[in-house]
Image (tube, rainbow, N blue to C red; front, side):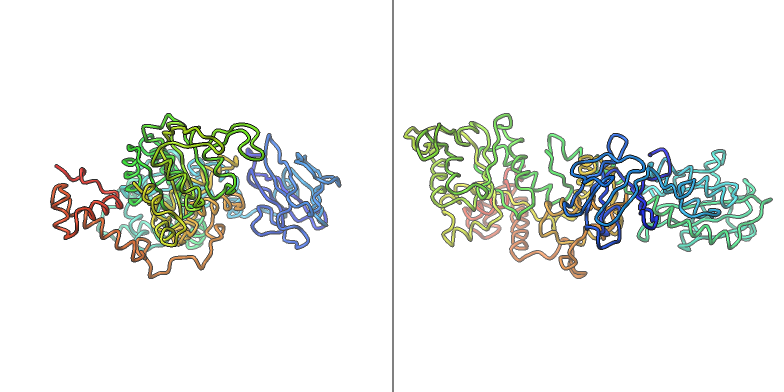
Length: 604
């Protein structure tokens, strides 16, 4: 299939309507989000799933009530489709064809194909390959259609702004055979310019490339993405040929959106390659596997690296979905305990009557059902790291026992009398306001202070603007590999939508949105509408991404800056800094601990 322009398809047996099948993974149903969308209400929204594997599509029913059959037999399992088989979905009968046989060349209808339609059909097939592979074919096709002597696709280097020839036809056309002045005129006008040799003879500026190559007329237009020029399409005819006319300009203008989209897709792929490079850097031993490039995350990770070098308990704070467990794993991997065991326990996911046994273990016969001794996670983790997620959900009775572990570094199994020493480092995390929980009596004050020796706060995704697109592209790469799909790119509208959204569910919500778009979007470019974001959860025009902070966040930022400024002036002298800030030295030490500020960093 990949070597031909013909797509597999379903043909409606009643009216011969053709439903092309594109992509390795496709859904079939009446929903407009399906890759094969059958606009009949009698068909289930998502009736079946198609997966291209081992040279053929396999059909799997998704809706038990959808009445999916193959050759009039119920499709209860994955079925490998063969050319000519009949697929029944509810009342609809479809014939599966390896390609659309309505005409000999795979296109429905009859009669001559217009140059524009021929070019577009060629592009549909060519775009199965990367843009760089099709540039030469496309430029050649345009050159032949408009009977040019030379054609050229020119890109703009995003770093230097230099013009770069991406493809030219014929290959014998020299790299210098185009006019920089013509590109300048096109850029200034923001539209197609049609020039004749009489036009540049009137100017005092040298047009040596045109004169040297005996060019008689030129068509040149800027290719744009969201108002930014990303390249040019440039055609010329020699002096002894018929000059370009207005009808040629009209045809040329009709091609510009196509070439703009192709260059835009190539730009997106370059972004993806850069993303992969940044991801590889972010997954290096010094950075773990936390995908980021925002300043606030960089500072968070730098602080986490310092925290990792100690053996003190750590409290990780942050909203749901910000990646607290990922950061805890990062701390463990960068600690001296990296080679020792790591265990994670979700205190809110284990029933209250079982969590004590899970943590501390039990002796045989200590309660009904205790048929043998059980070793708890505190023992099993030995000298490693124990991560207690959702620590705010831990029952008060167990909070007392956890406090004893932190104070005495020993446990007693349920039903046992022997004290067992433990050397595990405790890292806890919560999305709750533990200070409020302490005030309300839901969390022990002494345990809170024992856990909160060092604390790391993960910022919400709404404050990590530079990470949003990086993470989205990371998830696209990951799910393309996981699903065995071709890589997809984000359209400009999708990029805008991602940046405008507040992300109340943080990174976890972003991952779910991208996964859904990867599965349901039938196009190679993910449109903004495919993201299905809640319009009521967008930033307003008046809000800035780095603004809109709460009073607590503003105060914390001001405190950090004031403390750092005082430490710089005093060269790390805490007592002098306290005098400069007019606060008690002990109170300053407490603030520095809360903000992760080390006075040693400011000492000469």
